Image (cartoon, rainbow, N blue to C red; front, top):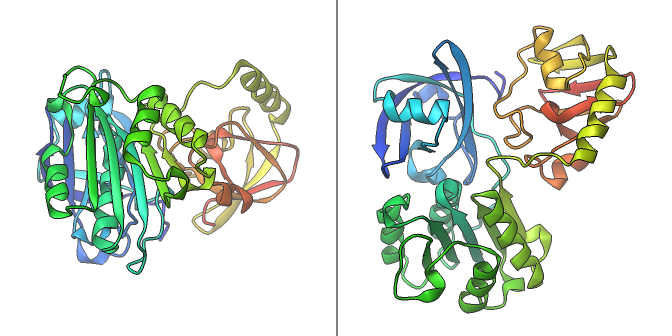
Length: 358
């Protein structure tokens, strides 16, 4: 059974977290429990037929692995086909196609560790970080976690009550700071967006010895993530201690776009070997990318975002060489091991082989 195969799961519950966010809890039958085991910080790819269109989206799990639940959170966005469909139509008892958990926004937790963790979250970026917080505090009794969470106002804070409950339950181990851009409180530092200056001030005020923090987690809007990362690096945090989860990818530079367009033209018609579900077939590169070429030939190559973020289309290059535009969804270790995001990859010459099963 492929780890990238969709399974039909029943929706057990739809929970309104805020006016704009819904959490979906799935009922997992006993025979699929091992398939849907996950690590804190991972996400699910969901698929639905919406108006006759095959629509796929990635949503992060918001629970800890030992919470006994499979649950993701969907924030409604303007023009969002999937998120608006969830808000208007999805209900308990419906079924959704769900891919097994994946993603590398995670670390290994150890009950014997006394670690220090810090996270920056913005809006729905709290979802995977909520999973990490719950797991760290429960799994590592001597570890501490600090969360800086930015939102528009109190009514838009996803998991407001759950976070308050965690703070009460783990006194002295979980520090929570809400930053609101459109609602003023008593502390000036907490009024406003998590921009570069605010991130720097938050670290200065609330984090002792930033370079000694074991792991930093960042998820939210692009500008917030860039600001938080820059603030950390300026304070001596090692890059390998910074973990970033991106929901969207920025536009490629003009130079990179031109380079990839030239490579696509040069590679058009080249033959590739593609392995998926235990079978290897020859595929002609169609001038777009390896993923679309494989699917155009009839192969069920998996995908979701097609933007280099989710890593659903990850495959290992077993022969030849490819060029990859965006790589947000891969770790340095995965790249060193030969993995690429096929939605962003173009063969460089004949003899390329990729394996989706690896």
